Image (cartoon, rainbow, N blue to C red; front, side, top):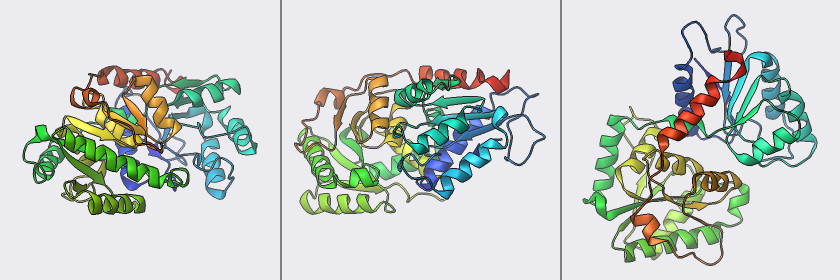
Length: 333
């Protein structure tokens, strides 16, 4: 089994996706080795911790009870802990980063998912840091979710070869400053997609207030756009499974947030991406994905060829990289 520490900035679908990916990694361990199920149990061997925002990265100057509680939990079994799929890319050289580095010095293995985090920790002498990719690249949509996704997309556009799925940016304080530019650029992307002879279908989450505002703004100005609520599906399917399945059923897609870009890449083709954060930009650079910044004041012209003739990407190579980094972790040897 595995342990994922929840953070306040996670949506439930993100947490579930990480837990599923942790289970896949756990299955790689030989039968005579165990991954610790709970931090307080000391009779098992290893403790696997994943969390996209384990250290409150969105608030790099804030030292709060949640941040300190996570560090305290890690201290209980640091020599047998594998931190995986981490990022500290938003940190500056402040007190919080110093406290974090003091705790990470004793962690057996730290596997980060972006180049900046790797360099920051290496520069601080935390040499047990490895660079890999987000563990959610290991996921595949279930057959049941794919069937549901086909029905949802075809209810908007019967021909799958004529639809283009567009995801919306996640909301955080930094991105909210650029909300008007993001809405304008998504609207422009929809107009350009229509010009290409495709039907734009926006994937949104009603729990994200920014998604609701953006979707309503687009509905008012461009009636030819369709919308799919990624939380409305058969209750036997998880939100993340449905989102990944949706991105698998359409060849054409524009992703505007980190998780949807990961899921689009798992199809084996490179999506056209709008990036809003350093973490997303790092992934774009490492995988050489076609991209634009969604925060630009002037709406970018889409690269039609990148959208309609997407390049292949070797998803198996990415997955092999993640699994190898995990299997070479110090506690497993």
